[in-house]
Length: 280
Image (cartoon, rainbow, N blue to C red):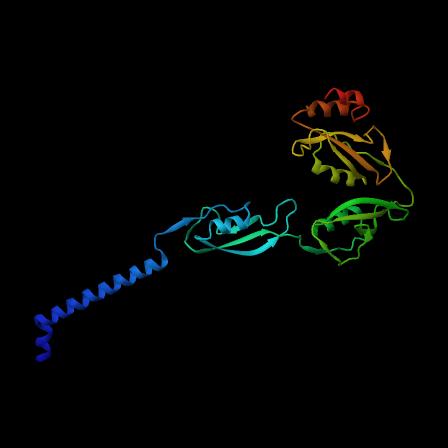
């Protein structure tokens, strides 16, 4: 009866009420503590760091984010330390102190293994080099029964053996067979082509790029082939491996639709000296 009387008595309910109040106060304090620790509701929008120098963004945003460089990749013509990729992505909403995983441009290019190009056709060799992120530099021809097949591969003027490690993006010279006779090749039509297209077009015709001359203040973005030497004459053929000198003009200063039309209609597809003077 004593226990029953206590449970049903006023004092019990007072104690119960106090326990409930204390419980909810403790729960409230716990949530406040968690909110304070996690900065609940305080988020930041991630800026776009790509293209900026890592040292600058790390210094500028050091109080908001923790920067971690996970990898460095060599990129030709991009300054060392430039941010290439980031995680989280721009415009993501994150808490203060969030880790920012960054990939930057390396100081030196990565190294790759030189493939074995010997006895391959020029086209096969080109594909293998591209798969290794290497490029053809110049083509040379020697007496050999296998026409346009790779006889030797060189790097910086010396023979390079397969599996040798060299920098990604390196230029490789190829010595090719002439098939037992130096059969000539026709010069392709280059007028109006962009600088980045020239080497591929010439190599497809077993020719090399010689000097490049920019006639309009090195305007590489708008530059187009205006003239070549030797010029592309109907039926004119030259020895494989011949270097072709190229002159560029800006398509903002020259109407290349007219230049190309005239070049295709003329017997000689490059401009003679008189027609060149008309554009100055």
